[in-house]
Length: 247
Image (cartoon, rainbow, N blue to C red):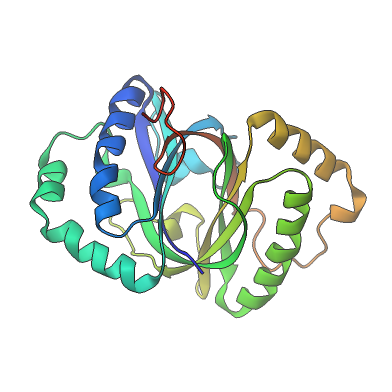
C-alpha cells in the first residue's frame, strides 16, 4: 500500500496565495524525488475542540489558518531515499533558507503506512483526521476503519485513507503525539476522505449521523475525545487537472 508523509502547517490567512505558490513551486522537485502526489488543503470547516483540534495542534494564532497536507510515495523505501535528497539537493536547501510564508517551528510532520486505502485519488474537498490509537489495537482499528470506508464510499466519497504512524518524530515545539495528547503505548493515525465537493461531503455526513446503525459501539479502539477532524479545500494537487488555484 501507499506510504504517506503527513503535515499540519500554520499559515497566516493573508499569506494564502504566497503559501500556495511556495508549495506549488516545489512540486516538480518533489516528483523528481519519487513523490507520486503532493496535496495541500486549506482550512475550510475546522471546529474548535474541547481537548484537541487542528488549531491547538499547531498553536495557531488568531490570524492563522491550518493547512492539511500530504505526500504520497509508492513505498517506505522511496520515502527514505527522498528524505536524503531533501537534505542534500541544493534546490531544496535554497528553499529551506528562503523566507517561509509560515512558521516552520510549529509545523508538524511524520511518516505513515497505509492500513486502509479505498477508492481513487482526487476531489474538490477533503476531511482530515488525526487519531490516537493504542498500538495493541491496530488491527481492531483497521477493521473498524475498513468498515467505515465502505460506508463513506457508498455515500459518495472518492477515496478513504487511514495511515498508521511509522516514522513520526517528537518535536521541540509541536508534533503529532502532542497534538492528540498521546499516552504511553499509543500510535497516531493520519487519515483523510476525499470528496467530489463540499456539498457531497455535507450531505453524506448528515445521512451517516442520522443512521442509527452507524452509531459507535463502546468500547472504541481509539480515544474519541482526543481525536480531531476538519474540512479542507485543496489549493495544490499535483495530479489534478490544472485550475487557477493549482496552476
